[in-house]
Length: 138
Length: 181
Image 1 (cartoon, chains in turn orange, green):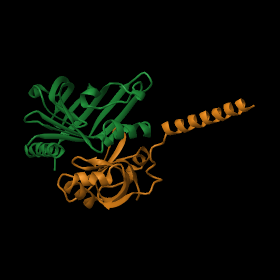
Image 2: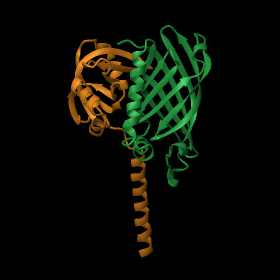
Image 3: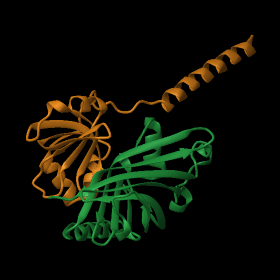
Image 4: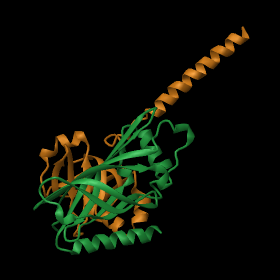
């Protein structure tokens, strides 16, 4: 009787462990659309923070969801992925927003010079500050 | 050490930016593929910055580690936190020269690039072969090579040794266009 109970308990624990393990292994990516932005900034200030102190900006923004407001300076599609750049005062740097597959579908509604807010995950700074998995807010 | 590397990179980029003929891409693609007994893992990065100075044949590439996107969120987390330590080493870089750059023309041909690859804070010299095509308005480069994780001090715990290969296949594709301000 007692042995049986122990076996049943162990089985249940094992199954729970299996389910938890499987869930963890298949943990979904962050859904940018459904998550509130960690920071809301404007394109110029955002680039400035990176160009003045990259290390500090990295600590603050990397892997965070950032909503960036700015003016579209270019729109293109490469390998079926939409990329829009937001204008800044800097000659070389801009904010490069790599759009999600969903957002790429509606890229034709966008125009250069348009005011826009983009929400995406910040991955760092090369010549430009880069956002991936971006969604268009308005 | 890191500020020095950054400074050198900046200087390098500035030097290139000042010369007349430079080609660059901000959307270069780098993919890596790990084939292990337990699973195959692949990750894509489409935000690679690559610059070629067409007067000297020098090439500079910068890669953000956090821009590598994986199929599973957990793999991406482990990659960034445990293996390449992206918080400490946010970028991988390659700086080198294209050998026989002048021989490259509008017909696709093979050429070698010799230079230093830095990943995870460790720099190693590489000789990488790629396919090059040069026209007036573009320099196309693609190819692949192998990176050994031990070379760059990236440790894989014994528990997942069957899930992650020691030698990672890296493939790249850059479509450089003339740089206009």
